[in-house]
Image 1 (cartoon, helix red, strand yellow):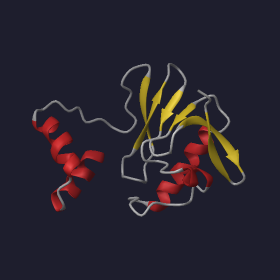
Image 2 (spheres, helix red, strand yellow):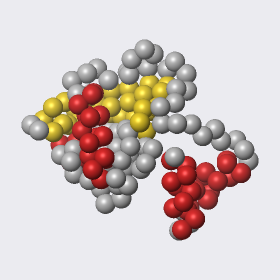
Image 3 (cartoon, helix red, strand yellow):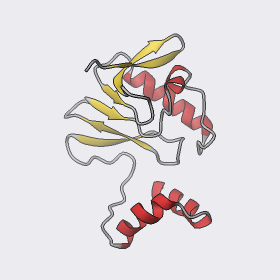
Image 4 (cartoon, helix red, strand yellow):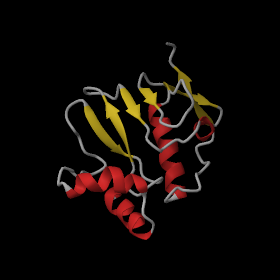
Amino acid sequence: KEFEYWEGIDRETPLDPMRDSVLPIIDAKKAELVTSDHAVDDHIRLTPTPGHTPDHFAVCAGRRADQAVFTGDLIHSPIQARYPDLVMRVDYDPKQASATRRAFLERYCDTATLCCTMHFPSPSVGHIKRWGDGFRCEAVAN
């Protein structure tokens, strides 16, 4: 679903990342399109986190347990961790995005799993902790 979503947007308004990074791989028949719950191997798994896009996913690393999770575009800033219901203008399904974000933060709150955020300022790797009605990503010391 994710590729189809971006392919449709690209047809309406060409997107540079699609043109220079994705379509050449598709055209060369080197892509393997997978579902958002795909397991690459025993150590790397995708987990569905829909809302920002129809089939958005996070990437989990670790054998038998999530030792680290990469958020992708699920959480755009520390403010969205503090207030999980805060949506981005570009979210495909804002209601689902906020519900998914809250469920993700609840799942990893107060666990040993490292949360690797994509859009937070450095340091952007930490542990999810409860903060009032929301959460924070407590940075891991260097």
